[in-house]
Image (cartoon, rainbow, N blue to C red; front, side):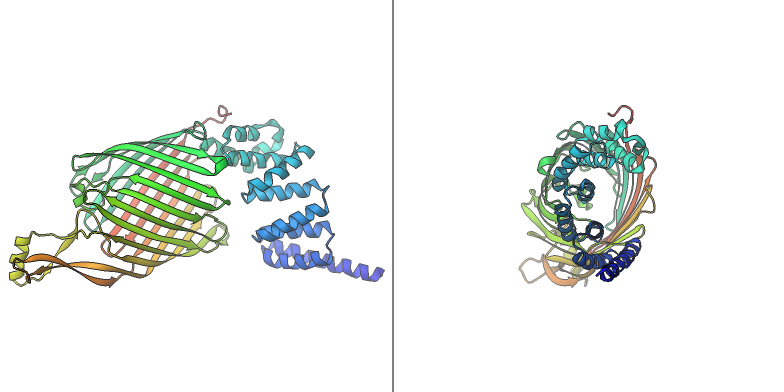
Length: 494
C-alpha cells in the first residue's frame, strides 16, 4: 500500500513538472488536458485543482475556468487567496458582476491587499467613478505599488478620461473623379460627470479642384449610464456649404451593451453629402437611419451586422445598405496580432442618378457623327444599383512597446457585382431621348487602411493614417495626421 502511494505521488510529481513546463512555453491547452486527468485522480488536491482552473483561464476556456474555480472554492471554503485569485481573473475578463461579491467577501477578510485595491480601482474606472478610482490609486496604503507600471498606467488612463482634451487633424482626400479635398479640423472636449461630457468640433473643408470652402461648427455631449450599459451621443451644429447655402447638422447615437460583448446601436444623422463634384454646387443633406448589432469580444469570435437607409429629401430618394463582417479569434505572435475574417455588403437605390455629361442637343449632333455611346456621370450623388460585394478581411496590429502601435486593415473583394448603367441615344421615339440600360458587371473592390500611432508622452499622441480604396467607379486615396493631447496635473486631479 505504501509502495502504491509512493508510486502515485511520483507520477503526480512528474506530471506536474511536465505541466509547468508546458505552461512556461505557453502551451496552455496541452497543460489543461494533463491537469484535467490529474484532477480526476486527485480530486481533493488543492494545488492541482487551482492550477487546473488557472490554466483553463489562460487557454481561454472560460466555461471550464468558472466551473473548476467554483468547485475549488466549495472544497476549500476557508482559502481566501483562492477566492481573490478567481475574482481577479473575473475582473481581468471584464466579468464585474461576478467579481464584485467575491471581492467584497475578501475585503472583509483582508482590506489591505494591493491586488484587491487595484481590482476595485479598475472597476470604479470602468463604471465611470473616475474620482473614486483615482483616489484608490493615490492612496498611501499602496506603498511601493504606487510606482508600479500597472498602477501608474491605470492612473494615467483615469486622468486622461476625466480631463480636458484637444484634437488637431488634417486630412487630404484625392480620387480620380477628379476630386481633392483638404480638411483641417479642431475638436475639444472635457469630462464633467458621467452624463455631461461636452465637446465642440470646428472644420473647414477646402475643395482644391474648384477652390471652394465649407465651414462647420458642431456641439456634442456624451451621456454615459454605466449601470445600464447605455451610451448616448448627441450632436448638433451648422454648416456653410461650398455652394453658398447653409444647413443644420446633427446626430443621435444610442448604444446598449449587455452580456459583456453584445452591442446594439441605433443612429439618426443629418449630414451634408460632399463626395462628388456636382454635390459641391447643390445642397444635398440626406438623413440617415442606421441599426447595428455586434459581438465585441476581442479575445474570440467577433462581428457586426449593420443596416442603414439614406433619405434624400430633395428628390424623395432612398439608398439602402445592408451587410456585416465576422472575425475569427486572434492569432498572436509576440507583439504581432493577426485576425482574418469575411464581410458582405449590399446597397441599392430607388432612383438612378447616372446622367449624361452633355445636353441632349449635343448628344444628337455627336450621334449623327457616328458616336453612339453617351458619356455619363453620377450627379449630384452616387446611386448604387443592386451592388453586392464579398470580401476577405485581414487585420494586423503590431505593438512593440507602449509608445508605438502600428496597424493594417485590408478588405479584398473576391466576388462583386452590380447593375452598371449605360446611356444611349434612343431614336425609336418621335423625338430622340437619352435612355438608360443596365448590364451586370463583376468587379473586385479593394480597401487597405494603415495607421501609425506614437505616444509622445502620457498626455500626447501623434497618429498618421493612410487609406487606399478602389471600387467599380473610382480610386480613392486618403491621408491624415492627428495630434491628441490631454491637459491634467496629477497633483490637482484628486
